[in-house]
Length: 472
Ligand code: NAD
Image (cartoon, rainbow, N blue to C red; front, side, top):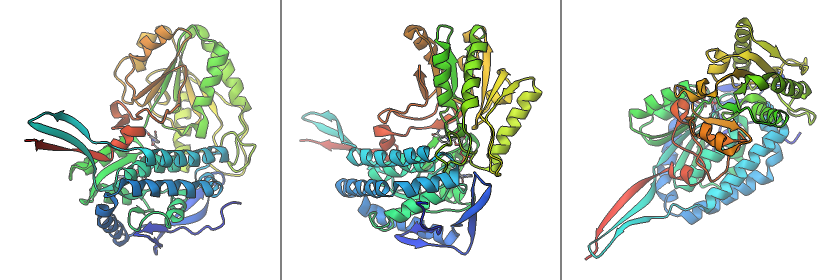
């Protein structure tokens, strides 16, 4: 075990704070509680906000000093990768290699945001006037994370928020607070007191953050339903809002593909993290003529998956991250069966309790079924056979979601013409689930508001201020 201590406290105003109340954290591989996190009280929350507000004027002053802090945070995370990764697997369930990949992403983004600068832009400069746009931080940022990728959420929220000169209140999900609490504890010696504050606890905490008048920026990743509540609450004090919400990414396969190759690649894009990735492939549209061959290849892959505890190096796929998510996926699969779908699985499940679900293919699925229309966020992939690509739901322009999508074809021109007909934040051709650090990441339709990553993600934590000067 790399995790040396199972005590977790919140970093508030530079101190490690416990509470009299706690929330239990379960290991999804056993279904049993294995640690506790403080349940943040109102008084502690207010102390965190006051500390962030107090430290903002100093923190915003010196971009080079901030960059040095971000680099130091990256070094600390790097030196403690093994412990953070193990904690993440214990609380979330994903295989250790995926957890280590998430810590590596955090380190990369901290280093990359440390080097980025929001340079002023002169939009008019003549003998009469000079007009300059400066990018200024917003103040205290309230950052709210989901349970599927808690460390990745720190990388895409805390890193740019701090880099742009904001101070932070960060809230992990009640299901997965531990890796975040440990990271903040490790950063205590390198981040100035009060600049980063982490609050853990139940779902009461989110509305405290979105309703707090001192907090000027909200960035929240989670479900569409929660995103709507966050937007409503943040609107009362007109906070700036970034929402990274659910997705129901289609992979649209055209009739000229190499079935073996494309089905095998799509398999790798659908089941990672047990299907619990916002931009995993969540449904596959296949021409009827290729359908049976396509299903055969996917079914073969699904049978080879080794399901188990993420700490076991032999494991390909861990459990779902929590009991409600397991129930949700089971419900969608059961409903698909009732609607006449065949469910193909094959992997045997560990019998040691835990929230395991076999990797499954839902064959005979159609638009209009819940497993196709809704985000399943689990290892049950519906395959929809189609006759005319223009009639499938992702090309009708009436979708609720719009996070990611992909088109698969041997003909780049055809692929591009289908891809540009899809409304999604990111559309891939002959790939999926690839995030280039320099491209903006965000959702269309109800999959989100605003963008994260790279320069676009940094700008989300700053606002334009115009300086209009008389030159003469
Ligand atoms: P969730 O919406 O249940 O919770 C997200 C966060 O919001 C948690 O920290 C939760 O405690 C908090 N919260 C709950 N109620 C709140 C309220 N009223 N006000 C403020 N905060 C509140 O989401 P989840 O189940 O943790 O995560 C899974 C969802 O996240 C999926 O839909 C997935 O697609 C989505 N997701 C999206 C992205 C993206 O970048 N678009 C990335 C990862 C996950």
